Length: 360
Image 1: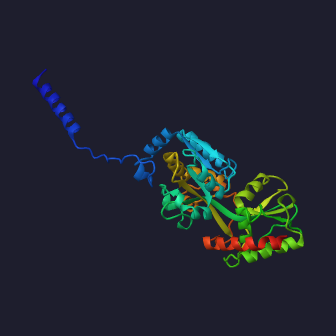
Image 2: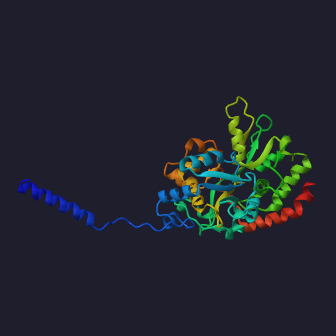
C-alpha cells in the first residue's frame, strides 16, 4: 500500500469513527402508557400505539349494529388495517343499556368503548377515561367534554320522511296537520330517544324547545286520527340518517317511494358521542379505535352511512369531505338547535307526567 493510499484509508476511518461518536439529536420517546390521555403522552408515535394495540389483539364494543350508520364497514376497515379483532356485545343496546352492561360485566369482559347519546354520556362522565384524539381541535366545543371524557363522533337532524306517492312534500311540521298525512314516531317518546327528539323538534318555536308544544302537536294528530303506528303511516318523524337511506334506495325509481326533508323552523340536531371506559380491558386498542374513528377515512364512512361526521366543517375546509356522499343528505334550512341537559331533563319529566293522558 502506498503512503498516499494509506493516508486516505486512515482519514476515512477517522471520519467514520467521528460520525459514530457524534451525539444523537433523535428525540427520546416516553415509556408506553396504554391508559394515557393522548397519543403523544402515552405512545409518542402512531406506530407505537398500533404495536401495543396489536399485542392486546382485540377490541370490545357495545351497542353498535353493523347496519347502523355504516358501522359494519368501519369495523371491517379497522380490523383489516390494524389486525385487531372487533367484538360487539349486544349490538342493539340503548345508550343506558350500554352503561348497565359495563357495570355488570365480569372483570376483563367489559366494553372498551361506548357509543352513547350525549345526555347519557354527561350523566356517566365519571366512568370514562379522558383521551383527546389527534383531531381534537376539529371537534366543535359544543359537542365534547373539554377534558376529553366524551366527544361527538357523528350525528344528524330530526327529519320528516314521507311517501310522495300519497302525500305532498311537507315543508314544516304544521303541514303534517293537513288531511292525508298519517304520521308516526319511531317508538314511545318515554322510552325511545329518537321518538322523544321527534316530539321536541315539533315543539321548536324561534329556536326554543317546549315539551308542552310538542305534546299538543301530537295530541292534535291523535285526535284527528292521523297519528299512526309506523306500519300504517305514510310519514315518519325520525333522524335523517334513518330516513335518508330509505329515500336513497328508491331515488332511481320512476315514482320514488320515499323522500326526506328537514322541516324549516325546526332544525333539531343531536350527536352520538364516543367514550373510553376507565376499566377498558384493551386500553391501547380502545385508543387506536378512537384515533381511527376521527380520521378522514372513518368519518367519511359514517357519511356514506348517511350520518354527519363530527369533523364535517374541518374536512370540508381542507377538501377531505366526501362530497358525493354529502350530496345525498337533505339540506339543512336554518341554524340547528342542540338541547341542553336541563332542557332535556325538564322535557322528559313533563312528558312522563302527561304523554299517556293526552295520547290515550
